[in-house]
Length: 345
Ligand code: PHE
Image 1 (cartoon, helix red, strand yellow):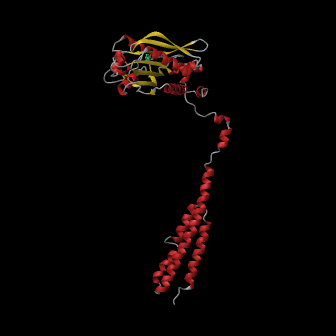
Image 2: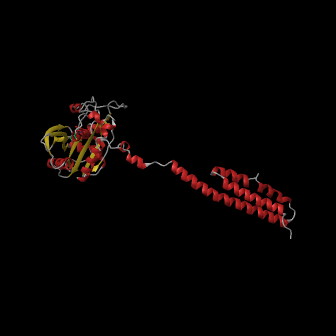
Image 3: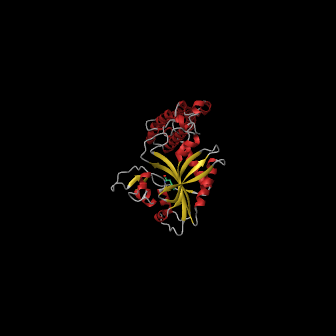
């Protein structure tokens, strides 16, 4: 039986041996890739042996040699796969080591741990207020900051040229119809939007940013925050309003605090009142306005005043946070100075 010549066999065996050696010597995946392609590629030794197969006239020998070369290629591929796994594991470990962040050092360094973020005082107060009102059975609603004159004034029973408009120094937004678009001067327009969208009964609070043409000073900012409250149900009376304000006061400020109402005027409530909070030391904080929702306002909200009644209230969140935390100047709250924010965690 014909056999392939020993020299060709040796050639293949040697090629495999030196190939495996080169593979094991590869120092990186990249290197290995190059070594492998030179071994099994078209210009490799095995390829040139394979190329000569066509010239071998003896079918048996050709078969044997072909088999030999294929086995050799398999062995080389096998060795390369094994080396590749080794190299990749090492490279991965190296990458992890290189990208490692030493958290133990971070935790130990006091200056770094102090850099942890905190919520702004107004955000903290808003979230606490929402929690308290949710606890009292209210839902949260929001409305747009850029409002139409209709929602900000007219629907709230403040027609154009009504003298009460001077209660709010309004910032206007340029629009096709001059004066028809404003930056909302209070959160009360959200009352109307909620009445129009939610079927009664309604128990809602609406926090948000409001805007007035004010020069900033220790107690005024042109941008500040309010929270509006709206209750619409059957047979709601002024006593419900007073009781809700009192429950809120105790729940938010603490059992040592009480509230009082003083007669006042707002176009959208009748009767209207201002409410104050009494601290345990006997001093008072003026908080906001409130009253029974005016029938015109109920109608603007799509409700029949003969069927539904309700109350509304609104007060400043920034002012309240200022009082609560003894902040002397409102402007500090918007200074963007981390040393200020850091004091209130
Ligand atoms: N919107 C009023 C203000 O900004 C406050 C208020 C709200 C008064 C609801 C009565 C009822 O001054």
